[in-house]
Length: 619
Image (tube, rainbow, N blue to C red):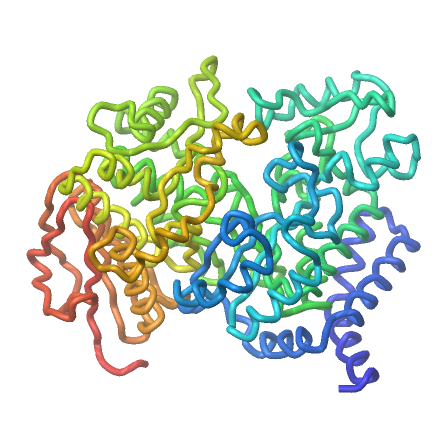
């Protein structure tokens, strides 16, 4: 299309959202017409800068707005440096990524951050520059282009709550420029910060206590919710929203398909509140959703909301006024590892029942492990019914999953241990938490077989849920914990690096050896991915429900979509189980193709079954 045709496309998209967008903007920014005019011009400028290939991709996805809600997407999350050294290295490894069945690639933070003060890349000093050791923006755009040729979507973190203290805005604020201090939260003394501290929880009470830090150069106090080197941005200032939105669109124009909004609940601050999940946050996210639909409708917003379900779900918005396209299924991850430790599915059954009751329009990312720690934000009022008191239960979970509990095969490490509160979070790779590491060290073949079953079963369970399953890079070859971080002075104080080790490419070469652990895991996951992509019962539009197994050690999940019905059974207990189903239909084992007796389904400890009933032609 020529320029006039593209101008008409922009005008039509903008007109569709203009009234609501202007109303929200005016309410948030006190009808600041100058800021609004700049904002609109910025949207037009970002649209005009969008490459033709990405505009073509936008048009295709506009015709199929549910392109990400089916049953074909499989994600992989990775640190570029750990996976292949740099962006060019990742580009060279795209054949491997495709071989893994992955078509959704989440690149962990790769924008410029100061060494030793980066929080794993979450303290950005330049939103338009890649960390030099990883490459350049041109390298990122080239990788995205190659991914798109292979129908692989690219996801990138957008750290919107704060900048590094080394960001240009922060440097100019430190130097005393009032306009840049107004982009942050600066105070002449501690009086107002102390008022904030009365109601605002601490994110890292042991490693970074408090929510404010003293800036010696400016002679002022600055808000630093996460770490002292991460300065919170003031989104009550329209300049911040305008410029940060333009930064987001700049990344989209490099070919990023999914923008992960990091720490989104924190972005609006107000004295006398918890500064979490305030109504203005939802206004901002709703505006960002409309911005994407105007400038880059092929792009998705993925919300990182590490909160209890009641706080997470509102970030979907409503069907009429949506916010995030996708959200992390955080509670399910924590509940899953609770279930591994307790061998008791009651909490997981309860929590999944709540997820299954949500509208099908809501899409989750499902995962066993992510780059971060596992926090035990469980439903303790529910657990107390069974005698599981919060503090004691957290200690049990951490003891079991670090191998301190007698007989536990798991090997993890604690993060942010707070002996005073009796609280800590957990780190470790999927394989090590499942017991593969300890079984291999001990040379115990029976334990190894059990750990392999558990690892594969957990992945099958994740693939059974509606949404996008995401593998952590290395899980496809059962990579173990990396204890080498203890010897690195820049990492030694952060146990999360135990599961951020470099991909073992020598081990990856064994992925085709059916006798190796790597080969068994790799083949099993590929088989699960292929079956999921083949059968419509895994579609996001499927009906889902909890199947009553009459056994607190066995989780049952039912799915139905257009004539296909699946019953997934997952044995979290430490012994063999036999389940009798009352579900209607005749079933065959989806993995073997053999007929299954639904009245006597046998499951080894740590095992699973996918049972399929086909009621006939697709309807």
